[in-house]
Image 1 (cartoon, rainbow, N blue to C red):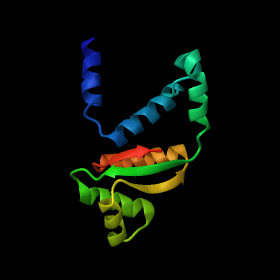
Image 2: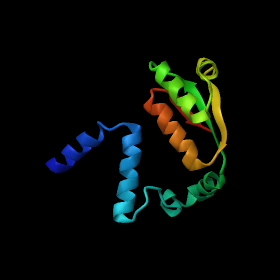
Image 3: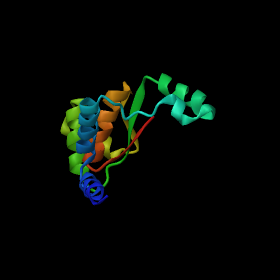
Length: 124
């Protein structure tokens, strides 16, 4: 049990991006998926789970830049290929949709990058 506590303590120190990489490595190593199977959600939630799975286009909305505004602006510039003034304007306009029509993987990657920079982000 003490070994498990040590592992949990170490995992709690990881950043969002490091956690994402850890999950991918565990999935590859053991041939498993971190996604919850639809049947495990319960019979009452099957319709809701199917509707959620059908969504293939996501919008990444910046809710707040947080305390690290400069880091968030850098991520926006890199992800969208914007100039400094445009990226700053987008960060200042929060809450604002940063990017629309992304697939789930790309949306989650952008969300993780923005959150690692200190932003508050929501997928819609």
